[in-house]
Length: 182
Figure (tube, rainbow, N blue to C red):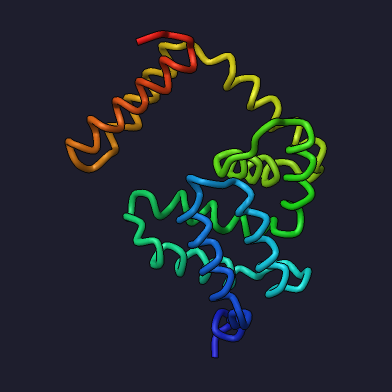
């Protein structure tokens, strides 16, 4: 038996529940950002305050990818998000509470940006400061840049009809955001 074979770690019992909860969170992301705290409760019930091991993280990310049917192109970044959720499940509820106390809304995209901030900065207050800095930069975005990003996003939509609809939606959002009456 080699060194690598003797170091294999078994996946924790119950991680299928974590993967299913994250998959469900992605399914309902359009309607609510607070789903992230529900996922954290499931993680807490499975991991019981302990950090998940790398086998758990990989198994959960792979299972969510399969359940959601993500393409190879989107599977990598989204699997990374899944691992961040599970890795920070103990810190997310407090971070969400503090963020919501200072801001009016909290979407799924805010949750993903919060995870990135928590991943970069161990101190909660500093992670929230990163979020606020990110929000300020986002608010200062120039219309031309926002339009360019919207067009770039729709180029990744699969069908022509979906591209047209996405373009119209993005254009309407952009116009509304910048007070353009059309």
